[in-house]
Amino acid sequence: MAKTKQFKTESKKLLELMINSIYTHKEIFLRELISNASDALDKRHYLALTDASKADEYEVFIQLDNEKRTITITDNGVGLTEEELVNNLGTIARSGSKEFKEGVENDDIDIIGQFGVGFYSAFMVSQNVTVITKSVNYEQAFKWSSSGTGSYTISETSKEEYGTTVILTLRDNDEETEENYDEFLTEHKIKSLVKKYSDYVRYPIKMDVTKTDYPDDKDQNPITYSETETLNSMIPLWKRNKSDITDVEYTDFYKHQFNDFEEPFKVIHTKVEGLTTYTSLLFIPRKAPFDLYSEKFEKGLQLFSKGVFIMDKNKDLLPDYFRFVRGLVDTSDLSLNISREMLQQDRQLKKIATNVEKKIRAELEKMLKNDRETYIEFYNTYGINLKYGIYEGFGVNKEKLQDLIMFKTTKNDEFVTLKDYVNAMPEEQKVIYYASGKTKDSILALPQMDLVKEKDYEVLLFTDDIDEFMVNILMKYEDFEFKSINQGDLDLVDKEVEEKLDELSKEKESLLNTLKEALADKVTDVKLSKRLKDSPVCLVSGEGLSMEMEKVLKNMPNANDAKATKILEINPNHEIFNTLETLYETKPDSVKKYAKILYNQALLIEGLPLDNPVEFSNLMVELMIKGNK
Image (cartoon, rainbow, N blue to C red; front, top):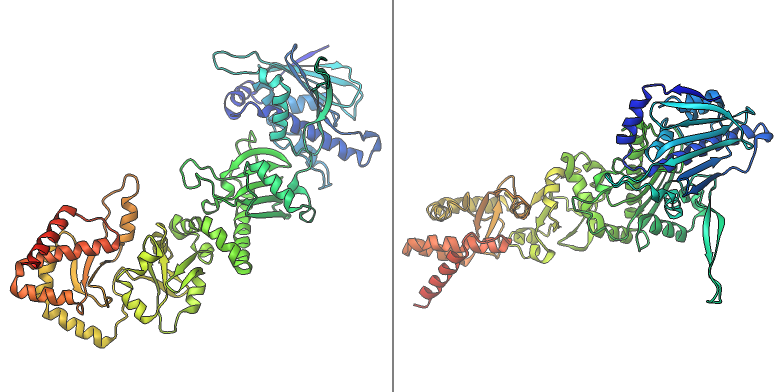
């Protein structure tokens, strides 16, 4: 006789909450029920180790019945007694699998289901759920049934084989919400869901699949028949020994799993055992995704628990500077709350993320040390990510990444690391020099390079927009500060030369002030240059924002009016300075016009836009006309 019981733990409210809120994808009901079946098979397999009579050919079987609108999932696992039905299916958020594992001492037992409420996801797609089960420890079978509305019934029934059968009677399609439950009655949908979520469950998941043979004789009708098919591959590639996996297998897996047409640039396969146990299989793509730097790009690793797919992109497993890495993590050490889809940010997951970051970084360091040519190929594709990694978070990761970044220099067409640069510095050099621009050629043509070239000092070439922002965070490498040739005083001239220049500046103070007045809204100062050798003028920045940073900021969306402080430097040894001196004595009004021309010339050299192109053009024409009179 059937007994009606009420769910415990405020079941009705919890069921409504779960069905309507917790699971965002209704299709995961199949994943949950297969995982429960796998648990039951694990338990029976464990019991069979000491009692051979309990052994069997373990499997999960799925049946579809379109007429009755049912999905039936059967396992020949350990089964349930009446008490276990009440305790495990009558109480939401109670995990029989967890209790079972705690009750045995053998650490080798491998049970997926520590999740508590996965069974109840069946009510997302079902108007009624029936469970028929027979425990290996009890000869009487039982039937459990519920529509998920707050109560359930239990009755004795007959069942020949040990194990559990779950029968889902699907809901009708809902035109108002456009929910289509019919799709779960198609072989194609079930096969795709098993492949997506449960491909690596270690027991075969079988289903009778419709097949069609087409006779050679076209006049004969096709022959349709049913054949039992195993839907899952069972053994994850990442759980095999690395020594047994070929490069071709890694490549094929990567292409299939992550929808790439090219082989990966690097494979990183790691198994970790200890306080935190997990396996990671990571890939560095050969080409960066086209949207890698867009806001829509989603970083993250696939997350599995005991081979069961949990989520596609867990962003917490990768830092932003390794956002290009694809791959997966499989672990049994996850703390999960009421559903697999809502992972707690627990210590175990954070430890795994920390270890994954360390492993990727260690592999890159090894590549840089042992195979620089390959590393440079990687760096050409992903180097900018490492620079952003140093810049973001106010430099919290700079110590981790500073030895992985590289630059071309005035002396080297190949990339060099900061360590390479420092090791090659002459003893008297006290800072690390850098210069910024769009290309190497444009930087080498900068007039500010004159003095550094004369000293034969190597200069790092910054050609990425992020470079100057990054170096302002980095500040120094080892004991050497970074110094821009475009900013501030270089302190490279001899004391005697500096004293003479200071005297000349005092003598020509009136001229310099006149030039400064002419450019009052453009520059903060006009001074005689200590850095120019052959060029007539240059612009340098004061402290803070540089001109290169100004250019970057102006090109950004919603750019503000950020401006670098500009100083116009004039070469006292150039003929143009002699011309200015003469004009100041004979035609003082024209000096201001020359000041504007020289300022605009300096802007063009720096790659900065002219403030007033029309005015500049008119001044040039005016002076050309006067020059011919």
